[in-house]
Image: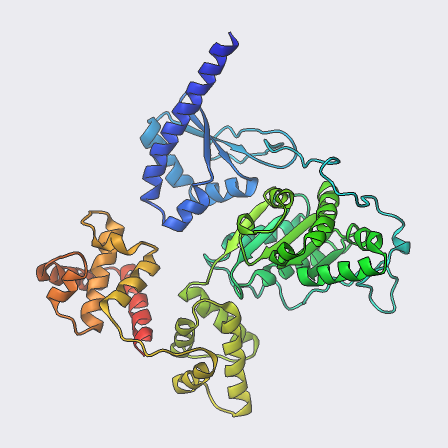
Length: 495
């Protein structure tokens, strides 16, 4: 009887997986590649009963994002795969013990539990103290002069807030998760919140913004920001003076602990031991932990596996290099804060030439501000060019068909090989037509040469593509804006 029931369950799971696979093939054609990998790859199909497909999603935040941004797409896809009577339920993975399901696609879930196990205690812990002694007897390395030693200086930069953090596709998940954590520290499924990405992309800004927002909303909570390097040095100093217990006890007092650059821990195994004990104590006590890293946690070679497993308990949110539009918004906001305005051509020129680093973008704005105030000059394109030469390596760029293809591919988030295939997919056809149009306008290549760069299309196809783009620009304002935006990027590349 049990075997029969198990076989029945397995068949439901297999049917669910097969149906969801069909759904994914449809969804993949309707969203960009990054959105697909971020929001649909992590979903698991767990059951299909009575024409209702049950999907397991990683968190309540994940579910709410799907409902807000993709409910129509999911609804239409389910109807297409399962028929008009098809329906969708969710199983949300939380962090307090049970799992539950929502009863309808458009209703709001009130999820009481999870499928995740609680963090293990006891046997995996290092032999370090886990109970806090009298706070008045603990040495406080962050005491504020003139106040009681238990008053903790949060070590935060008050200027790093969510209000001056520009949101874009590059950081949206991390920023929204950070706001969620700040509103309910220690009470969301994002614990720990691990923010990772390359140097200068804004990880520290988001981490400190969380700390500042927690202090604004929850003045009774002890918040502390510390770099991993400083944490390690403190641990070494306390070890030499025989005060390791005080060091651990102090960190166990924190309600919201923010540690920057945890990848530095990989070369400090003893500090990992101490941090493991602190992490367990805070997490088990419902305290919030926020970490940043230059590398994804899964790629942190030299980090103890038991720490890596704990990093996976919460949310790992990556930050990528900002796109052209986001870089412009960052520059405009910084200059506005400094009481200056830049012309659009200057903003676009700088945003195009500084592509991978928010920190360099801020540095450019400071240099421009200095030029304007010290030399009492308005910032025009010539001044901007001189400033940029001192900041970044300016290469003489020859505008080619290949460089235009790359810009269009980046803009539409498609791979180069898709421009070459013969397909009726609207997104691909449109990208190819626009690329041909821009290649004809900005290069001296012949129509035949342009066609050959797209896998062997003849010159008549290039003429037709250019005419189609011009006709659509005359009749479709939204389309015209997209083409104008790309033309501006290509133009900036030619300056």
